[in-house]
Length: 194
Picture 1 (cartoon, rainbow, N blue to C red):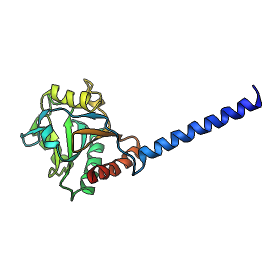
Picture 2: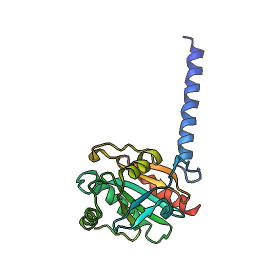
Picture 3: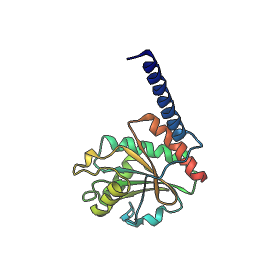
């Protein structure tokens, strides 16, 4: 290979890497638009008080969604802790809410969800814990929010999902990725200001 070709290839590679860094910076920056990843379609589930909760209850609010099951002792308490931190951080905002959806709806009755709430000290002022028909949970989780729903609830996703006021999914944030979790509050603020 000639020296000119190596120099040209090196410069081209540096330009490509620079473009990638700029693109990532724009995505993570405060002035870039948060992309729409999917849409939440109509659904109907039941909250911890036995009341119907539907997609209509999400309209006009920025919503963070996670998935849990009441017998979980590993991932779910960590997800609940992260949700609780978000609840405290955005406590004064009327157009912000949290939703936790059971990935084991056949076993998670409203009574079991109430016990889970008490066990973990969850404030349900703007945090809805939902259960219902498996088909409705599956639609919301796999079709609308693009997360896997496996037969074994212990293998559920470690993600917090951000939904805007128009029921558009705007982000999915892995609990195991600290930079992703740190970006979530910034993205919430950007959607609330919109």
